[in-house]
Length: 199
Image: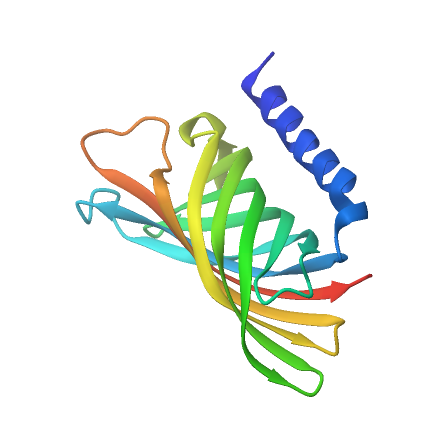
């Protein structure tokens, strides 16, 4: 079994697991939006000038323990992250994110709940490509199969139907499968998402 096939099997298993748990979930829905991703390099400058570009994120979510003070959300999100290295190199990496976050209300008004959110986001790399001066080639083997990040941010729920969320992803594992020296490469990202509750 190739690495790509193994990743797809894990991704399919996660989605099936989410579907199996949906009967126990208090709500489920869809969400999507934008992400800004970059790579923090230590020592700085080892990869030149690294800048974030806008990518897209979309998928579904389940929530649990809705009536409790502390509730939880599990999401399966397809995330396309884009990163530039200097003026002519651009990478595009597609991940399946399996986010697990805790939610705690910090403000409640009529029809509005604002929550602090935090948790962990394992991201399974599906594909990657690199464009150099307009010429594109696969870069899948350059990126590790799994990227782990912790996340924190805020979520506003309006009329129990819509959610508006901003959260920061702080990578805790190295991004690249092979490095040229002793540098550490960790992903950093911001996601701004809008969700709609279907049940």
